[in-house]
Image 1: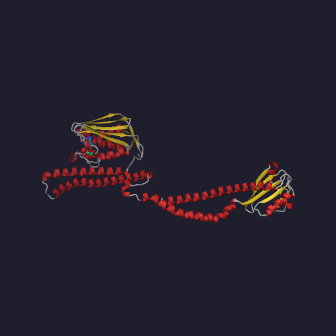
Image 2: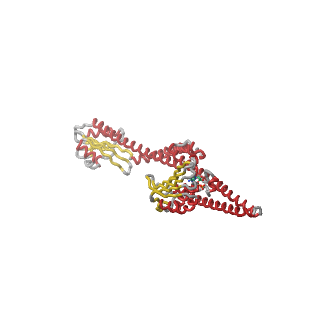
Image 3: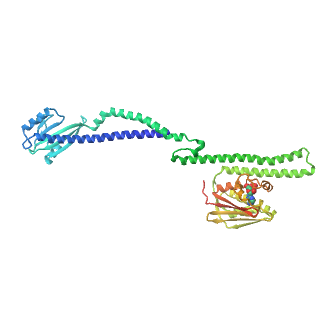
Length: 448
Ligand code: ADP
């Protein structure tokens, strides 16, 4: 970045120096030409004062000869009204051709005066002419040569190169220290404390994005570490009891009548382990996805119906009645994941219900989008815990969750599926009365 600023500044200033030099030359040259034109005009008027303007003759030629003998950078020519050259200060008048055709002479005959500029390629000069008609009809012409702009530029090129080189050397140091100064606040940024960095206002949104990104990464890393610690802990508990019971049987310490119940305990703990490992695998698979690759249309009503059918037996065992209400509503998503989401919510509604309780699943369309609501008449969730139930391994009552076969991961899976489907989840619950969990599906857009 420093190099880019440095290079661009150098380019910009060099271009400005060159452009300004050319412009100054041009203005100088235009002014110079004007001065010459003004000079020869004044000279012509002054000279005519010395001449007999009424009747031009030999006397006037003699006056002009005298004037020119004193030395002048001007070329003076006297021309008769018929174009014949009577006198010329630099050439032999007798050998000169008729001058009627010259534009300045032609103009002077017609309008009283005429001017013209002609360049002499070979000499690299320009000649300015001014012609004045006198009363006698004769014409006095004054001419002056000046270097062309090209020749003028060539003559000053060595000086120019010297000046530009000097300017560029100074520039090198100025631009160098300027870019250092511009970059200093950026170089001084403390990456550990981005939010406190004193930088240009234009850079602040960019730094904020990096800061947010870093915080997000730190948070994800923290969650990952906590998850690994929790997983080890959760796996260890059932494995410890399996190992304990197995050892007792193996050592012959278990009485014959206990062996059967130890076997049942081992089986239950092993089943818990399998449930747990399945949920962990589900969750880590979901962690890898952040959207649905090929969304398909799913009728929420039908999906809920098949979940209720599969859970019906376990609900019946506890005398829990299940109802499905509302209407068919289509969403776009992954059928397996939506099935899993509804299953987890209804399964919880059974697990945390009272015997003989009731579960109502409702689907339908609202202004916000398609809605699925699962409500139960179970034990409810205290207000202060409602936010946390979606955290991994968070359980309001750990031993109760374990007895009903919970892993503490069901709602984390639900939350993940909700996010994948651009949906939102809300909890309404009263301890002792029941819980209602609502999922609102906004129109699905991949990458949201
Ligand atoms: P678990 O496998 O323990 O059910 P979840 O992640 O599904 O884990 O739920 C987390 C916790 O939220 C549960 O342990 C329970 O305390 C509480 N919970 C979830 N659903 C309900 C519900 N319908 N009624 C009461 N408590 C619930």
